Amino acid sequence: MITMSDSKKLIYAGKAKDVYESKKEDEVIVSFRDDITAGDGEKKDNLQGKGHCNSLISSKLFEILEKNGIDTQYIKLISSGFMLSKKLDMIPLEVIARNIATGSLLKRFPFKESQKLNPPIIQMDYKNDEYHDPMLNDEITIALGIATQEELDEIRAITLKINKILSEFLKEKGILLVDFKLEFGKDKEGKIVLGDEISPDTCRYWDINTLEILDKDSFRQGQDNVMDIYEQLCGMIVEEKDIKNWGI
Image (cartoon, rainbow, N blue to C red; front, top):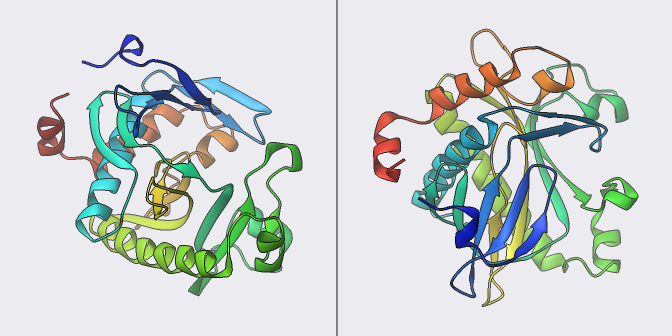
């Protein structure tokens, strides 16, 4: 069982996760907290068990991606809420893949609610709280020194592959992958690798039959059963054999 005492030093504190040094220089421990936020952190709460659910969902989806040839930061789930990961030099981009029009896309552009997007839209935002994560184009991204054109092309290609893999996997579970946010970094060899998490905090999941919300939008909309929704989604994605394999 991993605890905070196993880590050496806090590297990064986010809105719902902390990243700590590990015993190995090229590895980190990602701690999933129970905090939940929305609206640039203006709306906050603490949901007991949320970190547990997000760590399980992220671990399962990272494992699915690894099996399908996607390089990720994930090494293993070491205990409930704690993930051992490769240390990355994170690229300050939020890469958003959109399969269905909803959320902020409707506020910015004249799409219709639930309009299918084929091909999917790949959007890149500057990950920076001070500037409220503005949308970027390639020219601004390159001018800021965030990434080269070749790196942006690679990130887009990886994101589209991830979208296909996860959409197909989740469809089998009765889940529609509406949109999701990814973050990438570079490993010690300079290779672009998927990092962060893939959870209901960073993705929109709908029930494929009822279109019921299965993600953080339930919190944004003020529903009083948010933790029930997270647990429901976790049960749809994570199987008993996964729990046994992780030893938690």
